[in-house]
Length: 430
Image 1 (tube, rainbow, N blue to C red):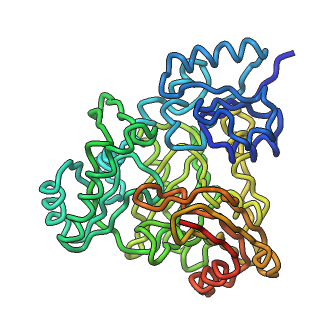
Image 2 (cartoon, rainbow, N blue to C red):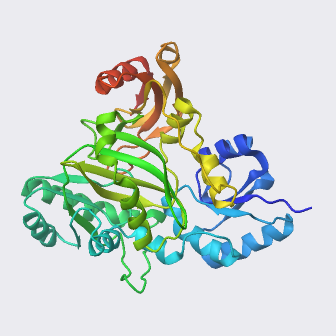
């Protein structure tokens, strides 16, 4: 009797535990071998785990073929929840003859310069952008884009090495950090060499970065499903930036959007569909980030995976919508259609909690947060004994966790965040 799981490629131990706990035999996991021995895997059936050197695709493919044969599997699909593994996932799906976005389409998405170039050529609203590798080129872009720019990696994710520069001094400081930090990430899969395609030159993200014009306006994030003949938006959330943290750091995601926020999004469906198809996608599950500037949608990012961070827990807590299940069903061909997503009667937000300093966590007590009636859920990403590293050396490690809270449309999320940070008793010894 064949098992028919979804193959999940290259995710992190916490996601493996979450998926395995909820869906048991529905998924098996192809993981980078540096995760071998992680204590979180004590909660997972070892037969569902295969550790491989993901940077060596030939060895990975051989190991996966052997694993499938040995365990009598007949995979129904392939899923990926992490940007750094998308290209491996696309190549592995092709080797296994499983439906998945093409390697070329994934390359166009991972290369943020080509992503915007292709969109601009197709008249899809997005920031103007230049690919640069020096201070002089960054300064030229600064002048070209009227002295208000964002520097970012060619292939990073989240807020990693994002800089908003409005003066020449800020450009110089950002470029100095780029030149120091990018070479240190050469072993990080997010910063691996991006191959070329018929439409794009190969690029080394440790040697180049991009400069784009700064787009003012409120920022949003969404998930959507692309079918052969239509597009379905699964969720729309507001994205609130964190003051006094590095540029791009998320304070909170909000759900649902207010009627005023939804008003400029009437034309979002066709924009998302065209933006995905010109990159080479024919179907799939995507997340996208965009800004509304003077009533018009301007796309920032798009990638063929569901929204991450605190978004899945926010939606499941608010309305019982399971983004992970939707993705697994989509890639396995079980999701022919999805009905309209209900909007909740009350507003919610996922508030992110950050460490204030580097060092070792010696005390972490969340009991006072959990005693608050307006707190719906708390997810801690850290525990005592964990080491905290701050930007620019590490941008993900500083996140202690997040709370799902009930809010009002007019709630002051910064004040709520301060209250939660005060209630979270944490001690970090340098």
